[in-house]
Image (cartoon, rainbow, N blue to C red):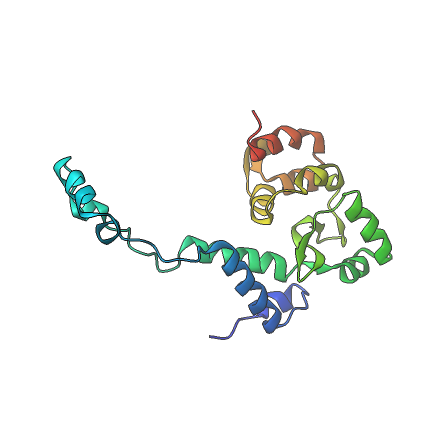
Length: 199
């Protein structure tokens, strides 16, 4: 089935079907284990199976869980592929921001923007851009250094999902919405500690 690029075209993202397929294949290879799920009923020695059955564990309980129609690994890979596949190259990000590519490179080195590597080059995911004015979201530069070594899916999920500790006008918002509404980026520091598992 061919990929539907219409949502990308509507969003002004210029990416080919071939590039998306390549990124998806790489993402899939990164998240799917390189071996099939083992069935303990055939993998365990007979004496261990006998011991488990004497302990009250039936062979049915040892059966692998049925595979989902779309396994979580494939969902993760597709999300990562869409995130990376739609991210902007340094020249494209510079054009969108109305600056020279060297300015974007300086911001990457700081870092005051978030980037992922794809095919050996840095790309800037779209979630950090303010769509209304073609700029990086205000305050994002103060949060970006804490995101630099986190997985892109973790960053995307944390930044775009509603958080119970963030409210704007009595409504829970995501860190992204928090910054877009003028919220203090320092407020996000503790939430980032949660993401990193820091006590």
